Each structure stands twice: as C-alpha cells, then as structure tokens.
Image (cartoon, rainbow, N blue to C red; front, side, top):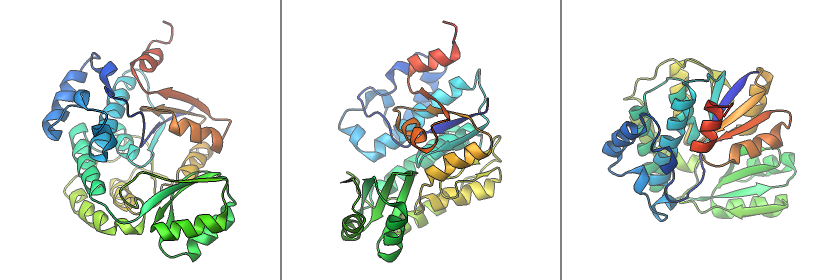
Length: 294
C-alpha cells in the first residue's frame, strides 16, 4: 500500500476547533509557541473570528501540523500534497520548513488575502469542461482558480466576467463564494509580489518526501522549485484533479486527509473511485489510526 497524506485548505469552522487535541503530548507547548507568534490562542477563537481568514488560515495550519506530528510517530507517507492553504502543512510535513516558519508564512498569507478587495469567486458544478475552459480563455477577467474534479471547479476574477461565463456555460449549479477577493487569479498580482519578498527571506530545505505542487500538479524535491511554486500559488490555479491523477500514476493507492472536514476525500472519490480514503480530523479519528486494535 502506498499512502499519500493530503491537507485541506478549508475545514470545520466550529467554535473550539482543535480543543479535543489539547491534551495530547506536546500540544500545549506547540499552542503556546503559536500564541506567541499570532497574539491569540487557537482554543479561544469565537464563531465570528472563525469567519475571518486571518484566523481560519493559521488555525487550520496549526491543527493539520499537530495531527501530522502525531501520525508521524507511527506512520510515514509516501508523498504529500495540500489544497491551497493545505500546501503549507504538506511542506511542513515534508520537512521543508519548521512549524514556526510555516506559521509565520501562513500568517502573512492570510493578512494579504484579507486585504484583497478586487474581484470574487464562484463554484461551478456540472458542466461541459471543454466549453467552460474555452469560455474562460475567450473572456477577459476570469480564470479557473480551483480545478477540483471533473465536474467541479471554482472560477475567480471580475464578477461580471464570471457571470458571463456561467451564463454561457449553463452549468447545473453555480454559487458565488463569500470571499473578499479573486484568489488564485491574476487579480492577486500585488499580493503575490508582496508575498514573494517574504518568501525570499526564508530558507527552504529539500523535501524528505515528494511534495505535489498546486500550480504544477507534479512532485519535486528541489527546494528552489518548491519556493517558486509556492510564490506562484497566489495567482495560479489549484490543479487538484491533476494532482490526484498524477499521484495515482506514481503508485499511490490510498489517501489520508489530515485536517478538519472531509472536503478532499469527497473530491478524491469523484476523481478516482478506486483510491482508498481515510479522514483524520480530530482526536478520535487520530486515536483510531494510532491504536487500530483498540
């Protein structure tokens, strides 16, 4: 069995997210380090705060890396990947940077995204892919931001341009997302430039295991390529459908979604029904993996 760990970029926004992990070994120390950097505690977040990307992004990174640390005490993934924000957890898991370095990068990323005010995003389900892609190429101001599966993508760009593509593509369903900007699109160029200067101050280590990039859907162990891919992620598309397909081509037969929620295993089922799927998002599911006989 060849197992890849995949890390979500979104998850449960319940108050008290991560509280059930607080009593696990070394978690208290990690949470104290995170609070010193962030100026707030994961365990104290309110429902309103969890609607704000400046809180949700660091919170998800903390939970995902805590889960990964515990899992690594008894398991080793063959490869890793993360969807959007989740790529940071994947890179931490692969040893590209330490916990606090990754947390500071996520904090900077979340702050830049929170200030973005240009454009919007819309999820589109059930469509003719060739037609949709052709429409995006022909329409200025809209791109496919997240290629999640054969029948689900997220468009990003100017609202009128997105509406035009949706009207012409006639998908079965579409919904505009409650976001502040057109993430993973050229409209994030200013934020990407600012974030690039932040990345240049950080030294990346060679990944200990293959890391599949959002923007290339390919695995690499070259730290400079990893950094360039992360820089390009701000404006580039998340090629998740291709990422999972490439993992399968490289021998992966099972994926473990490490983090709150079941978004990625749901997408994986749509991409390749033959892949084994496991969710590890809280203390209960973690204990089941660490102590399977109990």
